Amino acid sequence: YEIGVRFNRRPYSVAESSDGYGMETSFSVSAIDIPLTRGINITSFADRLIGVGVFVSVIPSFTIGEDVDELGSEKNGVNSFMFYGQGGLELILLSFLLN
Image 1 (cartoon, rainbow, N blue to C red):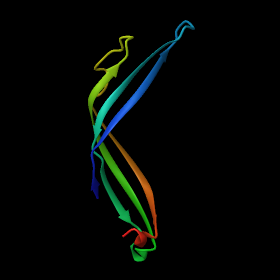
Image 2: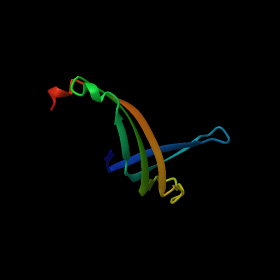
Image 3: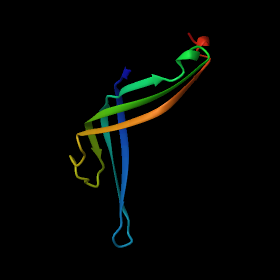
Image 4: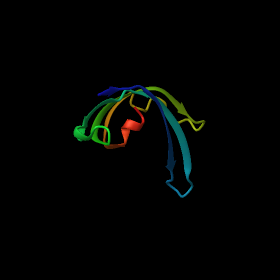
């Protein structure tokens, strides 16, 4: 298992066009993410030669700031809390060289 904290800044760009003349606005959202990860080593029998594992994470994310541009985008239109997840497969080769 693993617990972490990371700063995340996500820029967005939104384009509107109702009459052929486009108007573009942009904003960014700053957040603190706290990934909570759990993994399993599938190949524990070959520990030093090869490692294959799978992991899954749940990530609560807390918005700490919004930057809007001069076009007057609506502030406070972003959720202050998000919850998302991720998963993956890891491959470690010849780990005895690093230990």
